[in-house]
Image: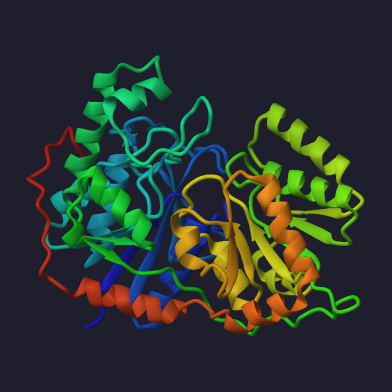
Length: 426
């Protein structure tokens, strides 16, 4: 008998089409396709929805099996849901009414770190699976594992180094934060990491390696977009897809484009994405960089998910120059689906997803000169494109990935080590 599954994410892709939300929703649909009764719960706040009196829940369009939890009262430092008189009773009622056999958590943001404990208190036999999509539990700097002052990447958290990032927060509070999160994560029966790199970071932080399975994210399979007709045989059209923020490497990419323009290279860079919720200083700097490179760079703005294939048909290469430890970028899988070689920073999950010299190329993170050199090589060597493109493999189908998750749901060998939660903790 297939399990009844509650899928929980920190937003809904209709409101915030980030990689985690998209994957969580795709997996929810795959569970239903496999014959499971599934309910999608996306937590949100006033960035996307206003609170409605009388209930924490809202609808998403006309879907009867997809709902929103308005969770605007949330402590980002401790990742705690602090609305004990609103959200917690409503979540309790939802659990009691739907009575899932499995709760699949994709993030603790907004829903609260205490949610697994609440699930176990209400439904002690329910199995909790949590996909670790990023480093929020480890790092109080929005899960970036990067220093606040200089942006340098770090490999581990600790009271003293974290206090140096946030001098206004005493070191002992970081120790308490870590203890708080580990206490509540102990209620999770099984973790999943989409990359080995992310698993290693959580094992170093203190989670049991035996409780973390590595399963790469999957995608709904689609036919590859046609390749464009190259000009004079050259594969010199590059594409960027995704959000524009300080950590995605857009400044590095535009600096590289400026260098290539100065060298006289004939190329095109097509940028798809928007700089949502960014500071005025960052957007002003990006606007200037676009203005400096507008002879070769097209700023094409945001895009819808169904437009990815047609947009890919206009590019030869996909560039992802992120400067932080990306875990399992959706853009890389989309590029591989359409057999576009990926040029990406050779760190974190990006280095796992793209095989350097096989189906893509690695560049030094944050190094515009190295990126420009690689892009020039790509534009001038059509044989390189043919070889890397031919070796590109599509990601696993979302249905196959759902099957692997469902196998974990029936595996009772790993059990929760949490203790009975108190009312205050929940």
